[in-house]
Length: 435
Image 1 (cartoon, rainbow, N blue to C red):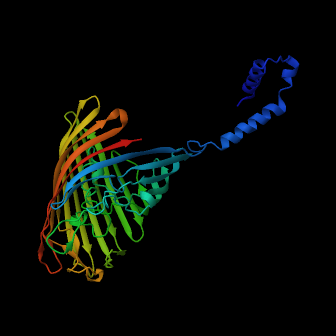
Image 2: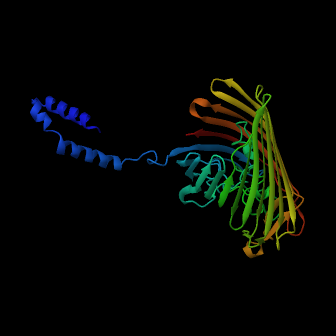
Image 3: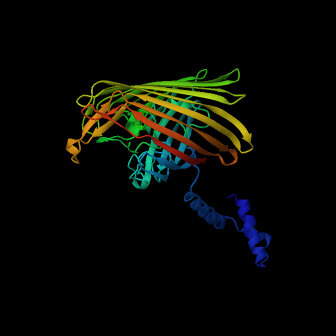
């Protein structure tokens, strides 16, 4: 606080108390009086939270999202309230950066999820699923890393973060329906497939990533401790690469642009994972996953289309033979501004997964030692559905209602005998608000 302001405050106080001050005595108010007040103010400032410090900025962002799912598995029906699933759930994100020199900066990202009920671990017997990463009370660190960035050379990041191939294919979706409709088994991952045999089969493993992390088309979909490089964008094109132990490496390429009234986004990624240990004790020495995504929208009409493709190759010694699984996902729809609230998105979706189902044959006993891991090479997962998303611009919010129908064919037990599975269907009503 400047000294002349302090003098004014002191003078006003003295006048209010009925005291008269001569010019001589006013001149004596310098020195110790004001120095003491400035010291007190400095102490208060030192204990006050700021938006970053004088060198590094701080930005707080995130969203809160919840959904009500009304489900029917062919035997039981119920309704659950749950989060949108780990890596997509409610979270707060702290981002900061500081300029080192012209064209160079450094910064950090800390993202914390607050999961009340994780849809990825919710099931018929678990209406409130715990967080995937095992965070206390559903709170978990999703990302925590620092980076150094050059405007001309690109960015290097180190720490817990999305690797280059994390969700590469689906993030091209610019329709406004990405959160409620994508090729990840967020809503049904933990739900069991009702079947006629002893096969313990979940809908998340109806098109499995065989321990790589993810479900259906989202293999290698969990954040990891990696070193990552992202190039600058040239003419709409950019590339990324990352490496992490034990052992994963991947590369990705992306493009986004607009021409002749069309918006186009495309991306592809390849990753390899080795030296993993599967949940059932079998070593997973080598896995490769390729994914690609293409999104096209006609801006004047709002008509859009999305195609995602994924191929997983595995060589799982001692459990199953070399295997290949393919996943296709498509979505078409219309993005239109029908009201002053914001855009309305109508969509229909279809997913097909071949050769990726995996489960455990309990052999009719309760002994874990008797459980046998089974891979169904001729399995086929089919998902179809549709929905409506309403954006509310004034509140940075989206609300939706959707329907999905799931079916699985070609399941087998450890003897090769066919196992039937009931269809699963649900209606989801949800909302997400950004901050």
